[in-house]
Length: 421
Image 1 (cartoon, helix red, strand yellow):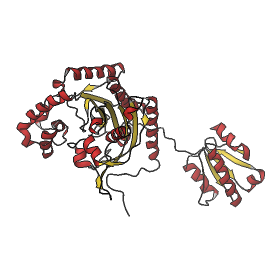
Image 2 (tube, helix red, strand yellow; image 1 turned 45 degrees about the vertical axis):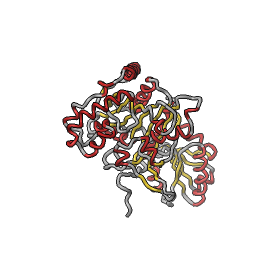
Image 3 (cartoon, helix red, strand yellow; image 1 turned 135 degrees about the vertical axis):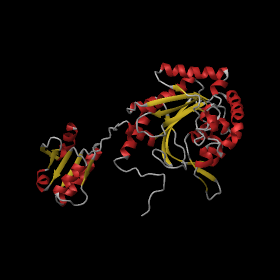
Image 4 (spheres, one colour; image 1 turned 90 degrees about the vertical axis):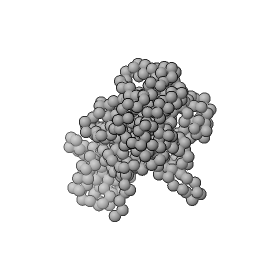
């Protein structure tokens, strides 16, 4: 027997309906917020992620699935969605469109080589939105509002929104120097990754999982102490918009997103539900002014966020929320005899063409076994066809909830069922 690869999962019937439901809710919300779908390839040239995500990130250094194709090109299965969207934005010159900002959404599988655990798979599914072309703090608040609204619309209550600012380039340069001065005396005590990060991108040191409890972390310089006046004003405006929208938040100066392209606004949404697990983050995002330039496009501000569907489902389970996924048929046809089987096939096609969910037996089961199959399918109506029904040109329709049974002419079946549904 061949099993699936480690870190992947088969989503079987009974479970897949939940994924479909979440996807539909996400797309509906995107429509309400006026975000349009963009679909990018599952693999890209590796350079897209090296330049877009950042060489110093764990994703690029340790987690990417990279391969060389037969044309000797280095390609990578996408580990996240933003860099691909940014590449498409530049390639198709979306910055030249009349409609600005470009408000885009995506959903699909992503791939990262990391230790599989609950809610963290090597192949996982992300929903994400990106707003490209606006430096208005109001759209930062809109993106955060979208994320919170999506979770709350499904009934989640144990949510905690954490925000921070990473400042502009001047703020980050001053903060970078302070971080280097702070961590250099204890550099030898840090993990090998952080020793490299300290030279290349010291902000990543704050995001280290291995050195998280090192004493130097608690006393590390905070970005809020190095903000330029423009950065400070921008962050204050974002908070004012969140206040206006009635969104509760906590400012955490230690919040650092794991990707190099973030600046200014950064945020994460956590689940505080009991039993959710040690890793509480549900989703995160922030502003990425400069990313489009990094991928050879014009200077373009942008902001977005992404969530993991796997962790979304875990949070729903932790709060005991059952998705209203109905698994039933409108009609199940029980046919007795060869002629009845033929008639059942035509009837089933007509029911389906009328928008009804219909099925029948395909294993030549006896009548009792067919009724049991209808029960298992949670059918609302069972349609019975035998020799007598064929002769009288009627079908016996049994409403399963009430147990009532009625003979209905062939040409009235669809209207009869629809009226009672």
